[in-house]
Amino acid sequence: MSPEYTPTELMAIAMARSFRDGEVVVMGAVPTIPLAACRLAQTLHAPTLSYIVGGSGTVNPTPAALPTQSCDPKLEGGPCTLPLPDVVLLEGRGDVLDVFCAGGLQIDAHGNCNLVCVGERERPKLRGPGSVGLPFLPAVGRTIIYTLAHNPRTFVERVDFVSGAGDRAELVVTTLGTMDFDPESRRMRLASTHPGVHVDDVVAATGFQLLLPSSVPETPPPTREELAELRRLDPGGSLR
Amino acid sequence: MGTRLVSLEEAVASLVPAGATVGVGGMHMTAAPMALVRELVRTRVRVRRLVTSPSTSLQADLLIGAGLVDELVSPYVGFEDLGLAPCFRRAAEEGSLRIVECDEGGLSHALYAGSGGIPFIPLPPGIERTEIPAASRELYGETKDPFTGETHWAIRALRPDIAFIACREADEEGNVAFGRIAFTDRLLALAARSLVVQVERLVSQEEIAAHAPGTTLPAFLVSAVVVAPGGCRPTSFPGEYDRDEDELRAYLAAARTPEGFAEYLGATAG
View 1 (cartoon, rainbow over the protein chains, first blue to last red):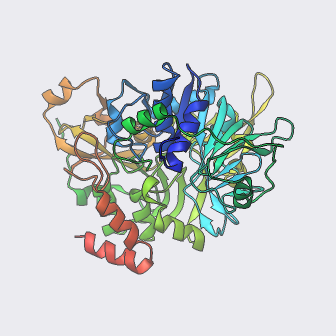
View 2 (cartoon, chains in turn yellow, blue):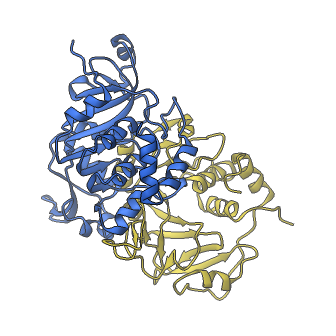
View 3 (cartoon, helix red, strand yellow):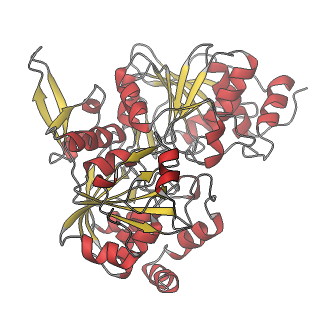
């Protein structure tokens, strides 16, 4: 019998499981979920994982509670801070950073991300904040995409504007399940559904034809240890 | 020893040329030079082009909402966990603001180039896989690597006529200690033709010297210093105060409509 948890907590746990020891992870705005995932992975199976909270450039910060903003002053107690222009240099260098955690207003079948606009850029239906660091996606080892908005407006066949390319997209984590990419076609493929979610639910929430393997496993629910550690890192309940 | 201390009113009225490219610092909801920005809004200074940090929030949204900005160069305008930027969004959706798309890396390199008299900087791979360069041909152009013959996208140098940033301390002469993470604000300061720094407090020359090598903006790069304790509110200044979340949320709620924004401006203009 598995303990009770929220979809957001399972997202952080699924992301944490994908990090490997020794990797360097970079994340952007609203870092709550990837930051939780990095800290959880460090605690459980990847002790030498490093992470950079982009924006602030703080490296391996361990704030008492999970911040929801990337330049939260609470992040400044970490062992090191990279000046932001240096983070930019290292993102471009291509051989230092292993994982980029990204998101978008729109995410498409090939893992392209859009933070600029829905509709025409000159006269958009919805103007997003802008591309920020997403152009670096193909320069970093692999991309993990995450979003709380698994719906047909977010998951579209083709993004209205490419802020960052999906060339190295490897994993997508949402409140409904996880997706990976078919190695041949590079199209998004359902990899697992979260407990209680049916394949049909994910298909209906996705605005393009999701590749479906012959059998789709369930995302393993959090273990007691995973959830206990996560809750310890998140005493404020940011993920609940 | 001269002094670079000026009042808020003097800093804005006498230093901003007409039709200027203006740089404004602060990253996300941290260290935004709000005292200076509010003075720009109060005196209705027209900004031909606004250049921001890689991620900006209230400092840009207020200027845009007040109808003072013709053109924007910014990789991100938003309030992160609190939501989208209401005035920026409205202006973009109405088509009343010209937006030069750019990215974080491009902006940082463009300011570096501007700081050093470098006309443009070729960019690392990744940008060519996006729609940004095609949307912003005045900022991104193709160039040939003279050594390999390969083609790369390059970013053009950015040189604001004047930049506004917020730091912790300055002495009267105008030597400035950031006293916080500088983000790209040092590059913005170096790239700008003139620079106004808002500080939390004035300190003696001995104190500023005691903070070296953290005192990284020499007075000769600084046009004016304005002492404005708490002047980044409602954004945060690390080590001094956190962001005022209630006030930021009140702004976001008010600015949802042009009328609400106007009321907010009237109430906070003082």
